[in-house]
Image: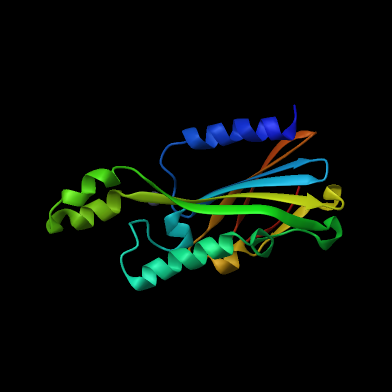
Length: 177
Ligand SMILES: [Zn+2]
């Protein structure tokens, strides 16, 4: 199976997952020839520390800064220099989930409850082209330095040999596949 086909299937599985768990993000890494694609999803809580709509200037800036940093994948998911990978595309967005559309007309008293029920996720898509993708055997997750509320990341590697699921965490942030 082509890595890109497997990636699309895994993305569908990701989309079908139930409510996310705060502190746990997901990263899919698909390697095909010298091309690498990554799909990243993490709860807003992990990235900016809240999931309601950004209200204050400070919150809005935090979201903007997070999106800007999520568009620099090699500073978050550091690949070995020997692989010679460069970013060919990097997209990041904040997606709100749940029943937020019902919340607008609620009374002030219900606002706090609404905040708790509202979930949002940061999602990013990356593409890289590498001089030698076979050298991309490890990732140093500087992600945990940048995003202090992120605790774990479930990582799925997909290549022509199949699929490998691994987990990294704040205390164990370097992985070799
Ligand atoms: Zn949430």
